[in-house]
Image 1 (cartoon, rainbow, N blue to C red):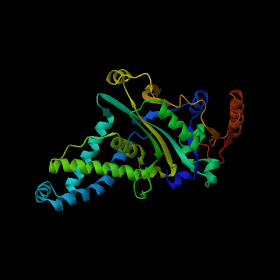
Image 2 (image 1 turned 120 degrees about the vertical axis):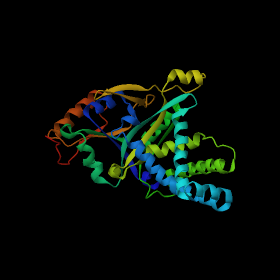
Image 3 (image 1 turned 30 degrees about the horizontal axis):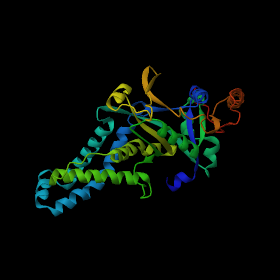
Image 4 (image 1 turned 135 degrees about the vertical axis):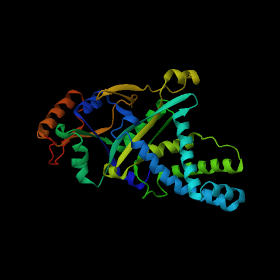
Length: 336
């Protein structure tokens, strides 16, 4: 956890009235198949960020072997030079790791993501009113924000990963491009690990060393990078993500690796209809008794005070009167 995260005390999750009702009734959150996120091209863009950053790290790897070995030098020159070879090695490395991540042996995995906005203690404006860019997404409906205690949510996710069997799981703040990625950031270490794998694979190609096989840590590093790199245009959101790679075929998993009596249960991938499309998702926190909700903020709306009053009555009826209810003071009432 870096210095910026230590300042955070809230995770904001913006949703509709229907979404809010579902969270309060079930005390669960959903992690959605990455192909059905609001921006379905997110992982493709994350890959382009990863490729650009990894390429800069692979160039010295190729250049070192180029300078050390005459045969390598000839081969590199025949294949377009150091940068061209480095680009191909970068793409091949990501392809190899991605294939291994999405299909572990005979088993396919489904990446699912649950998203929040990080809000720092000293940002009193957003702590009170939320982000206009997020409220705009709900137009005349106004929307709601469920505000969670950050450290307690980390504990809930840790329990989720301890209680259920996933291929890969992780969490962290989103990195918008890589310009400000310092050595203390965990993504810096994940990039280093992928670079090490690229170096081993290039050595295998040019020197005939043992062919490297991606291990769990290599795949975890790729998962972190693809789940947490995002276009700079979304930087205002200060997003934080929980992500899991769930097995998509419960029967195949059990057949391939039968569950022992003390093994973790598998998390079933479910489907819901959204705008006429079947959207795969996973229910998170099914073994948590109650989510650490600190408050709910009603978004900008012409009847926001009535919404607050109604929500307080609803929470009292559900035995959740300890949750504070506020309304955003941003003067925005959506589109007519």
